[in-house]
Image (cartoon, rainbow, N blue to C red; front, side, top):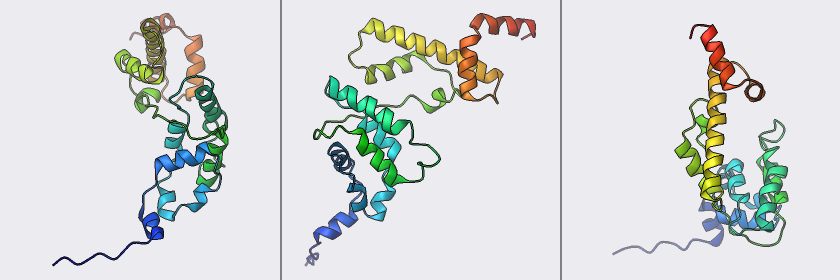
Length: 197
């Protein structure tokens, strides 16, 4: 005969629950600055601010609300998320996420996919097919010819920077970006020809 399990209180259910992404998004949409304080220590460990920025910044409806969330998340969160004075303070990061919301009620948020980290870090060359797929998910309304043009442009620019990163492995990314604007593909070919490569 099976024994009956004791009833679990509401507090125990909340304590044993994982971090609820959708409750967090709802709290951000309603600018609930105190919501983070209600989490248990285990739930706080599961709060990943970087992941939350990808969810918060993307609202599925088109128009000014979607534009606001994207711009506001960039302005109030992305710029400072990894700042040395902010990165180790998740409650402050929570407050920043709440400040990005216009406070007009719950929105339907969608995940923004990532470009492959090794492509962003210039450790792998961009592949146009992958870049096109990435941009098609982010900019679902783009016409196919514009999507093609943007994908080709990004792929060519990334490959140019990738080549410079190979040539100058200790150079900072900002310096590589500047160098990429100043040095053309033809300049690189001339340099390789003259140096015997």
